[in-house]
Length: 106
Ligand SMILES: [Zn+2]
View 1 (cartoon, rainbow, N blue to C red):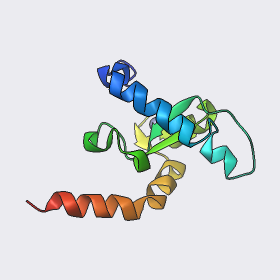
View 2: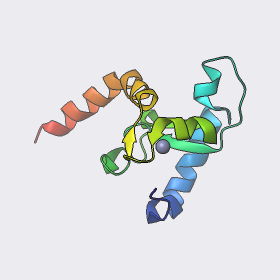
View 3: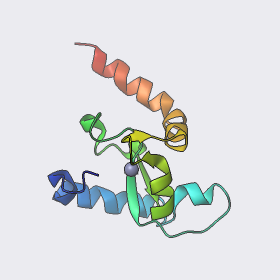
View 4: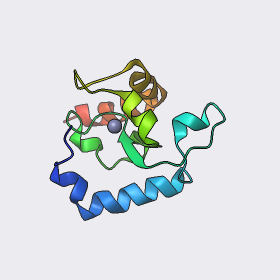
């Protein structure tokens, strides 16, 4: 989709991406839930970058995945999250709520 986004070329993203892969031991975290060991090749934004640029570099919003599972998170025709993608959003809901409460106060 937005592979040409300059964000993905930035040094801070590359550094963060590497950090997240290391945190997840270079393993696809969705495959891992089913006891499968699959090398992670991509770092996914649980709450999408386009809608939540403030969460672009927040650890809890980032997830290491293999290509196959990453494709399963996104509906490429609509640009929406799939049900599986939304499940991961549910899993970090507490952190998301905490974050949005903090950011509502102004
Ligand atoms: Zn993604």
